[in-house]
Image (cartoon, rainbow, N blue to C red; front, side, top):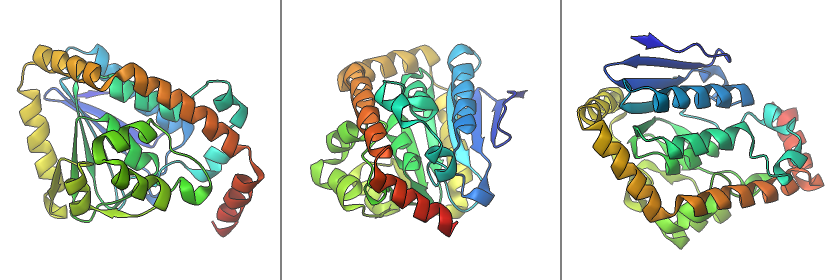
Length: 259
């Protein structure tokens, strides 16, 4: 087993049997992600991309909730001018690396997936959801806009009305409905999530790594990966503008005071 040295203390990356298991381990904070955690996630994906011994990347988390999205306190400290200047920041850098990874990628979701906890799923190959999984983007309720290319990818994959439920209405989508929409590939009982995920990653690891990489490159061409990257940049610029607005600052301050 290979263990990768990471810095945040909340991300684990352990390699065994050609699978790199990346675990978000901040359950006491609902697995909310900070900038340093995103950097660790990027390091782990970089390791997988560079290693001939890794054939599958699997992202999972500890506790009852997959991911609460960005840590609001950490997020509020970010300079909004950076996004307006074209710096997509550590979160979207991670998403882009995940999307560009030539290894098979799997994400296992239990409980709620909020914000980037939902939009990162658009950049992975296969998503397994527990039957208690719930998906919520939250951007509109923070007076923000979509990110991670979701304003392009969600309408294309889920249909405009389903995308607008998540991105405009702020609906919470349950696991079975997410399966019907095409946001996830499989739904399994919660107590079977770990074993089903392990079975799927083992099955993927047994396939030709060269064929998987070539197939993924063709799929990216089909969905126009360059267009997705442009949309991520465009979203980041508008996101930065909204983040600097008094409306968003007021909402975030109220949220932080409640915490």
